[in-house]
Length: 310
Ligand code: BMA
Image (cartoon, rainbow, N blue to C red):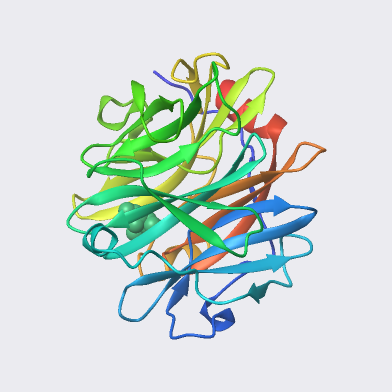
């Protein structure tokens, strides 16, 4: 029988949450959430997932000097391709993920037509974005790149849409993908009861001397009809990131505050990016209740402890 474990706050919510709401957006918008953040030349940038009242998403960029407040909108809506293929598969698009891979800024986008499919964009300046094409067939969402090539290959986490699992896949050129390996499977109780319904990767994996820290979302079903979205952490091997070392026993973040429990999808915290500072502190960006953009603080040491010792 598993015994209770000691109390520990691994992730501390920022007192000024939510840090971005629909008020910042100059267009009809009912929520800003699950956005992706990156630090570039000393400034914090966010590609905001903005949701219109028509329930279609659009992306805009905001920037801030400290990553917590003072966010200002940069430029206009990010244009998406005006092609027949994009219209077919990108009826809606959401959950962007920015990663700097060996100096090149890449952004994955979940595109959703009749099914979900991942697209890839590149940017040099966080102002203009170039669409490079789809990188999966249908049935995939939440592709997230590792920040460096592993074994000389681009490496990414991905999540098939059909079941709750996280996989590693590799590519020599960002076009051809293979060497798929499963890391975690939700309904096998790889994650506890709090992740039995589905799981998926969040932001860019964090390299530590003990392995890759991977933050993921985990969904619990309550009374067969409502969902509760948690955030969890696991550690995998550096040379083979599909080789699991351990999954933290408890979620590091669960919906509790009103901006996480009351919104367009209640009881959802959806971590979408993290920025690691030189001192090992981490800003964890997450969406609250499919309505608000929030941030919380943690550290590499606290995440390692949460993955390995709790
Ligand atoms: C997922 C994604 C997330 C969202 C979550 C809860 O499938 O769409 O962006 O936060 O559902 O609604």
